Picture 1 (cartoon, rainbow, N blue to C red):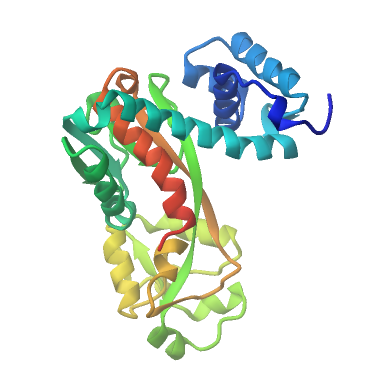
Picture 2 (cartoon, rainbow, N blue to C red):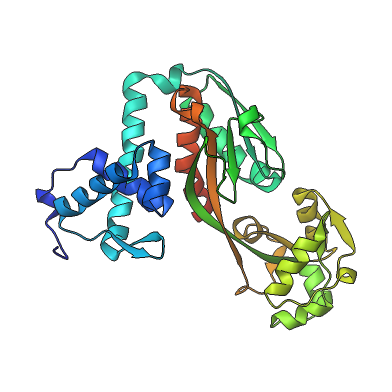
Length: 304
């Protein structure tokens, strides 16, 4: 295959492009085939046909997964834009978004519900004013199969086979402290210095402590004077100078009274959209899903 191509000579097959896009998002042919509801051999043939059509190698196999090549990464941006444009054209042509009505429940963590969902809701009011959005702010995993919500924003891919999942981006968090608290704490230059810090903990703090210790941060139960099951309370405690808090960087960086403690120490985690298979047949749920899939990567990349 050639390493370069003349884009002006290409006639694009959208089915092949969609196969490529979903495979890139899912990271394997088997996962992409499940997401698209087709067999793995059929999907593989579509991806191979696109590579031959473009004269490019789009994926490299790493273990059981697939990784985009440089050419695949370049193509990814174009195909994703095509997909978003196709959804927009379809909705605009049919008047579906404006005409859609009904109730859609989206569940997300307390932090995302209070930080990101108001911006999503504002956009939804412009796109589909007939849809009533319910935001289920909870740090617990809601059961979509029991209709506790229509769509979930999660940090892990679900294992249930009857759910549709799409990875829409990645977020990162780190430690933040108020200016006042950091002045009292003194200079922090490496993780070992955090042995003299106090942290805002969580109701079940053992797992949090173990994660910090694995990152070389020496913490003990005595360093957690306040515990809370609420992530929003956690953040407010940190803002008041009670101790160090851990929140997404987009939220923490936007707070003028807060500072990163160790800027190079961050915790990265994926962002998944999850829905029941009813997504394929419910226009109102599909509209909210598409809006989330488009807006979340943008909001996480440009949080302000």
